[in-house]
Amino acid sequence: MTGMYPKLTKHIEEILLQKISDERKAVLQPLIDFIKQKKRNQESASVNFICTHNSRRSHLAQIWAQTASAYFKIPDIHCYSGGTETTALFPKVVETLMETGFHIWKLNNSENPVYAVKYSENALPLIVFSKKYDNIFNPSTGFAAIMTCSQADGDCPFILGAEKRIPITFEDPKISDATPEQTRIYRERSLQIGAEMFYVFSQINH
Image (cartoon, rainbow, N blue to C red; front, side, top):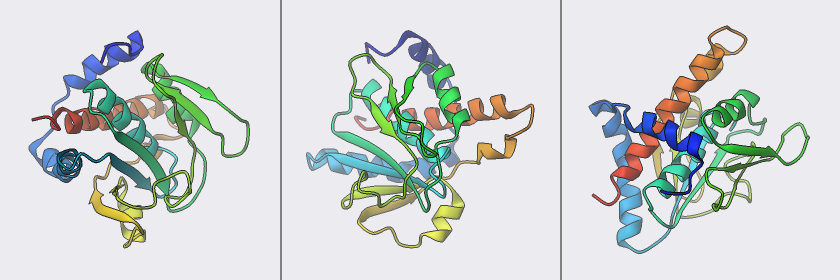
């Protein structure tokens, strides 16, 4: 997609060079199938990425998925995130995304801040903050619930309103918090999630 911020465009070049294993492709296939089916039915596709605290992986997946849908010009894709409980978007996630070229503004200074995230000057901002998966900000029916951590997948055997439930789990970058490896680990996890979401949307028109 033209119009994405230059620094982000350069990072996307790196994302597109990442190799996705056959094992991970199999994990991602149900999400590809869900979006393709919505397209065949000429319906919009809503995807809610769910993790325990809605603080790290689920936000990374939401933001990269929405960006990938724009990059590949797949219309009517609406990406959300939620948790089994409410905490706050972890600041290192914001820092990591800004380092890769997103423009992010903090809209308030509460304990659970609300952020606006943009990948392009002319795109609507994504409004992101920590919330439960069934928050009124998120869709209530007809969506794919993507379980991005095994704990949330185990804690939530039933997601009310979900049309499809798909486990696509990622290792928690939280393991690196308060260590010298934190910046590297968060960047690696963001790169992995970005690469997998770009792979998903590269397959929609195939």
